[in-house]
Length: 430
Image (cartoon, rainbow, N blue to C red):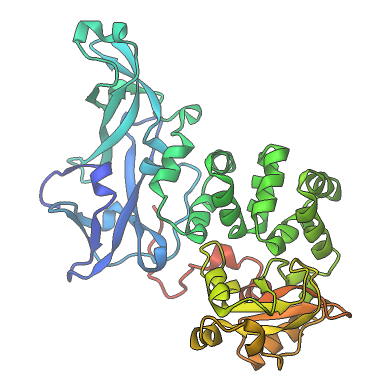
């Protein structure tokens, strides 16, 4: 860089990143800093940049050539492997913003919270944290000599702040969640996976039940078990109820039997009964793979009614592709299974017609004992997204979707390695 540069992270964190030819690489999501006992100012070692597919990578500051003009320019040589935070690293947006600190102002101690952090390039061409934008939380009396009111903001050199690197004085989890509120559950799960166990527990506690259930479904098994163990028992049972039944059953199967039974006892009886049925099957069978909550309607339901049901936002894309038609009762295990209707067929028929008149009866239902290989083979043979699972009396027990099968045929650590790019440039992190 030709001249010394300053920037506030809050503004920097939404800038686009370009290579030397002007092609967009991604956008800045966070700044990585390292605290040191021998340095008065934390060192800025790199940027967390979001590239295509919501993937986050690490760009060292040595690869950044400019942060001016509302954009960040890099050398173009970056490592496309997924960013993984190291133990000695701190994320400014995710961990420092909203952190309570003590500030020395004209010799007096003032308490406040960090609203923003300023970084700058030194004469030695490295980057460091230089100042912070603070919002006062002290009583008015503590700042009477300076005339500042409660809640007023001011900028101070980083050397005047204490408690910045103290683990106990962390940013509120709510602030971190707000930072990532636009992420899909799978992408938020990736962010949470990279946090420390303590931080993961704090974020889990701050998420609402539905959001946390969606995120847990996307996490590796070890993280799922760890988070569930960090919750109050009553809330853990609520989270299991909010999860898809097959995912909840998979998670329960990873817990000690006493803990799993205690959670089942706290759940609503109907919800617990569904999970107990799923837990009775081997996980690599149709019974172990299925969800007990597919879209089920009676034959007299109209096509308009069926379309209204599959349009519901809470349905996964896989489940919304197929309506399973049964005699009453319409909760699993249902009355006699009659057939299935694909969403494409629903869209081609008059809305007032009953769905019982357009059933696909040619697809052979699965037995709960069918193997994973048999399930995958039938989905592939008939180009289907979902298949019914019925018992010996033709009662619908549930449905297996293609995403359930993929979860079980991919390597166990696929959630952790899904963004690894073996063809990326070998640039070291940090």
